[in-house]
Amino acid sequence: MVIGFVIEQLLACLLIALAVYLGWHLHNINRLARWLNKPGKFHPPAGQGIWAEIFDRIYHLQQKNRDRKKKLAKYIARFKESTAAMPDATVVLNRYDQIEWVNKAAQESLGLQPAKDIGQHLSNLIRHPSFIRYLNRKDYETPLEIPAPVDEQQQLSVRIIPYGQNQRLLIARDITRIKRLEQMRRDFISNISHELRTPLTVIHGYLESMQDEADGPLAEWHDTLEMMMRQSGRMQNIVNDLLMLSRLENEELKPAAREEVPVPSQLYAIKEEALVLSAEKEHRITLECDNELGLYGVQNELYSVFSNLVFNAVRYTPKGGNITIRWYHDEAGAHLEVTDTGIGIPPQHLPRLTERFFRVDVGRSRDIGGTGLGLAIVKHVLERHQAKLRIKSQVNRGSTFICDFPAESMVIYPQQSVIKM
Ligand code: ADP
Image 1 (cartoon, helix red, strand yellow):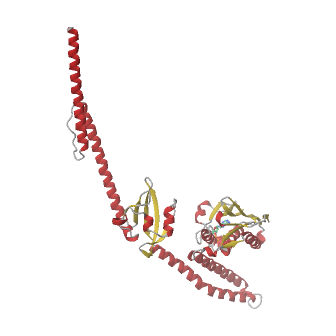
Image 2: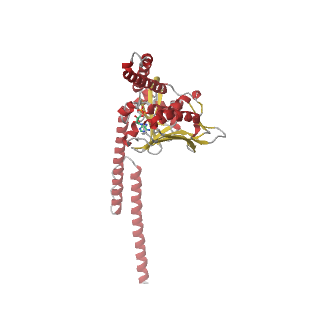
Image 3: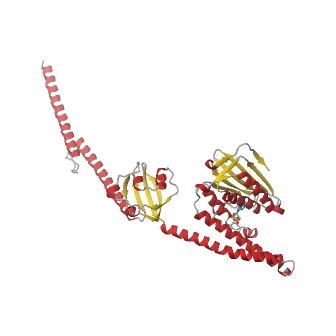
């Protein structure tokens, strides 16, 4: 009986202790909730035991967080300050191409106004068709050139840079001055070539008449006249190539200028000309030609590309070498391949080969009547036909020049076959 009473008292004491302990915890949870709900209140309530430690840890975490936020805000402010001061127009876009932020230059050159344009879809405000196409495209590797929306005379180079999670940065640079200088350079070359053409034709004509007399009264001038003829002919070639280059640069290729080009018949003609040019060098020239394959393009421009590549192969291949011309198509498109067993090109020169007047060996190119403009013309024409030039070469082994035309520009003629000549 006494034992039962004692146990009862003990249980009662235990329950009371447990209730007090629970109450203490609830009281502390309540204090914690109140503290967390008051964002302005930084210092934690005083606690005891385990709660002192919990308050302390949460307090430190909060402090760390606050410091991080402050730093982040400072970085953002600095980023905004620096981009605001940038001379290039900068626009921050969200994943839906809506404007999130614009700098001062963007307000001036793109005509964007933060007060009413933030949140607007960019394509509603910059409506140039090629810009809309560029924005919807996923490949922003090459910048786009458009007239500024606020002033048609001003030219902008626009580039989109993806960053973060589906965010994009638009940067627009004023290139009006560069464009004007480029145009001046083009006009200068075009004008000077036109100016030189007539006097050169006259000089060449007189030299031709004098050469007719080189076996008679002008016999002692025979070698000199021949040299003068060769040099004036070279100058005429340079002027003609320069004129062609300026035309390619100045005139946009209009879709109407395109026609069906019978590439096989061009290649047969070029092969015949190449055999004449090769003459005593006795090259073996092979043409593997898909006779059913033509191209949509500009006839004389394509002729110039193919003949430049084939004639270069003849000129840079020593006596007795092989030259193979292949014209074929696969699922990627149509390809013209000119392979020679000639002198080859050192790898360091390959990237510069299509620059105007770039020659691996200036003396050699001049001796064989090169203008240094052939591959520049090739590059320009191919760009106008959405085609690309690939070059593979090994010194003293030979070179392969490949023109890759897109499948869309292929024309297939029926009922003919591949002919090897
Ligand atoms: P060029 O009138 O001097 O031949 P191009 O623009 O046609 O000018 O070619 C530029 C340079 O590229 C040439 O001077 C020559 O050094 C090099 N080259 C072009 N084709 C070949 C080739 N098939 N083999 C070796 N070198 C070549």
